[in-house]
Image 1 (cartoon, rainbow, N blue to C red):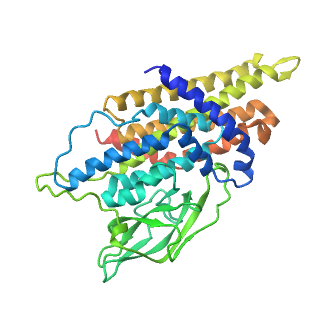
Image 2: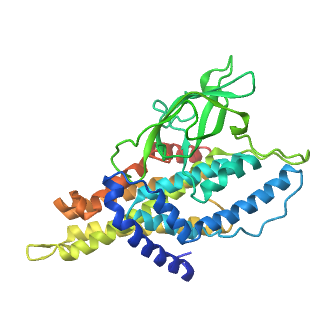
Length: 411
């Protein structure tokens, strides 16, 4: 794969028109006035039929799951309506040219939906999954805690205590939770209190919570460096009572011969990391586009700055970064389409390179613009602020390096 096909290019043009009409005029409100992005996301889903595609995927998934729970073997699938990874990638890239925060807010709702769809039973999927997939409700995925950082599971202190009546009492706090202030549905990850088992080795449990439950507090949006269009908050739980119907424990297959499939949390992390690659490409493309335009227009010593070699070097390095990230992304899409997805370490390598490149390109764009680049009017300062967190969330650079090195040393 070396380029988008004709249908994808037409979709890209339509998406750009939508962004110009619905996102760009609201950038000031999204960035500086606390406007939540969810109405824009819902309108976008409806405009491009994303909600209907999600509904079709959901219905097909539920049909398959009902057969599995009944102990029957579902037929082999030839495809699901709307299974075009390129379309999801294009949407992410184009939005990130103007507002990476919208992609983050949208993506985390889908991450919460994905957790429910991969770990829940049929009833749980019907109750919570569909409305997240279609964008009708806002979701959050609550794993990060104030003291855990990259040691998300080992350092986790949030707990679930099994009560005599079969319910669970949940306690703890979460931070840096995307969509936290506005989430309708919260996927909450914690540890089961087990007597005689040291905290680091206790069982990890995942619950689905609803906004407004007694004992659950969702903070106001936190102030942060970038991604202002993506509300981030804290969650506080004090004896929140969750029944067993809120515990994600997977499908129950009545077929004794069926092999139990284990959910690999690394698959979720790998998908998230690859998603950040498309976001990085959108930032790099926009920085390069703005820098080329400015290099032609900005006059110093009676000629455009683009005629100076140091400026040309910056532009050339930006283009090399864009080209490399695009090639990695196209390689991933082609392999995925052939049923040969990236390994966990490969996804980490893609994420490490693309996010470092995005930050470097955005920083060089500011340098190229000089004092103007430091001003919000010229947009590159926002692109830098939005790009910087990409080296932190979905796994820090250091965690990507760890994953890559471990894979290399295990061969």
